[in-house]
Image (cartoon, rainbow, N blue to C red; front, side, top):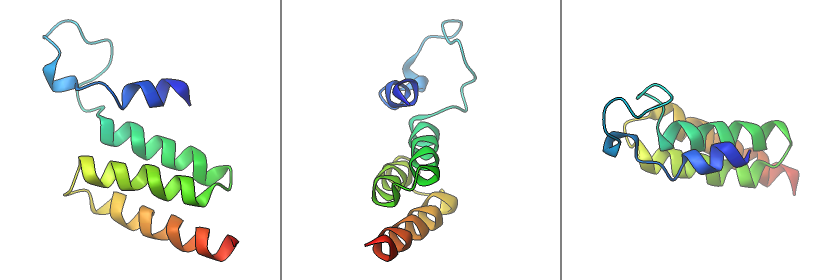
Length: 80
């Protein structure tokens, strides 16, 4: 997961053309979403919800991020 965490710090739009080693659609929101998925699969539901909240904040129009955050938060409450 350290690679995904590092990707959350990169503002891909600010990189000059030709210097990217990965496609432009990969964004901080996508990296946070991937971190959220990893945490969810490990049963770390509260951590998953936190990562997905960051994905949601980075992409306010991403309904998927909001729904997955809400689901992870519900699972976190049920795990207590």
